[in-house]
Length: 227
Length: 145
Image (cartoon, chains in turn brown, orange):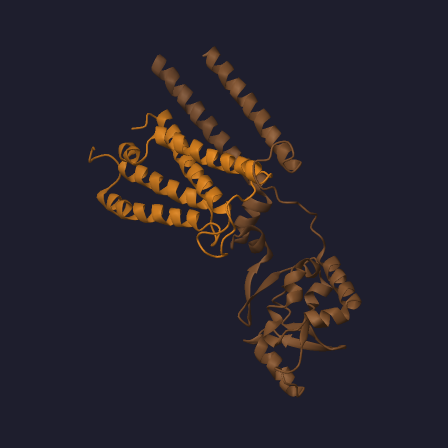
């Protein structure tokens, strides 16, 4: 029994040292021993800052952007600017509760405000309606669209919904936690992802409780058997 | 199996038909823990309740035919190991404890949610086996029929 205890304590100590080493290794980004792909962990920048950077870029490079923005109305999903510089726009998050979305249509040097109703079925239908009102031909004119989100501007901390563009309709796909964790259930996302350590401790409490109860009752039975 | 053991025929019949449904529902709650309300803890409790129900209706022998103490103890340790191994895999492969090793997947489907789904399965097994272990352990004290 004593030998077994010694072996167990050595194993536990080795396991603890290994775990500590791995934690340190992971913390320094796999510099000690590289097992796999360690992603560069950047500090999550504020969406508001991203917005400011985007606007600064827009102001500085307005004419270049107009060239970049050689897109039609349907290209609101496939804007080169969005694709090439997603970091400057950050996450395009808007709230479901704000049903109007403000867009800016850039035409040459003119910047025209445009308000979209997100309740409507198709965004491009509305855009087409807008350009029909303005007596413009979509095929001929080079239209660029810079998205500016009202919710984003007002409350940069609270990114409730992430919109996913599918074809040319906008639909509410998921929450922020769903994008972070991949779980559609918010409780699971919080329980196992954001507060994973907490839940691990909780599971440990149950484990110890079961072990204690089993040990308590089993020992009393064994004593009875010995007698 | 002793026919006199346990409760009346009505309770036995009802329990016999309810038991698979309870286990199925528990498994559903665990497996869909990352999509619908539920998860490992409630799903495990539902499965454990099904076994305890069989134990009450049929007696300890029938319940131990379904799952005995050795099996529950091993299963509980297995569930705990699943969580620990997944956590360490996160350290080894990505560099952070409990980091999601599998991909996120398409949100809202069964095969999504990175490691949350596997963690739910692990904790579901653990809780179910743990509660059954507690029940058995307490029964052993009173002679266990």
